[in-house]
Image 1 (cartoon, helix red, strand yellow):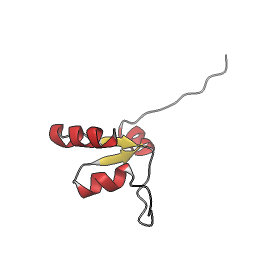
Image 2 (cartoon, rainbow, N blue to C red):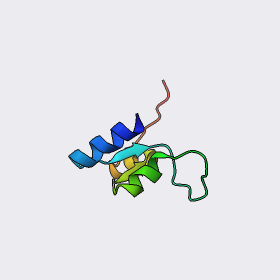
Image 3 (cartoon, rainbow, N blue to C red):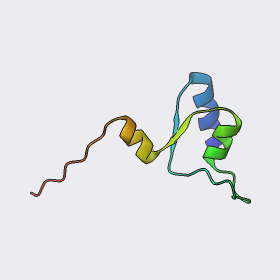
Image 4 (spheres, rainbow, N blue to C red):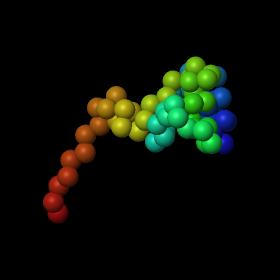
Length: 62
């Protein structure tokens, strides 16, 4: 499923948002950031996306 998401993002110029982080020492599992780097697809983690959107969470007491 990740391959479909990444290829769709590449074709349409979208950015992939994932909770996974790029890990240079990963041996067994190929993560979404690894695939994105291999195919030159922009990716961000969830918190970078929220910062880019200037998201604010306001906690109010009921």
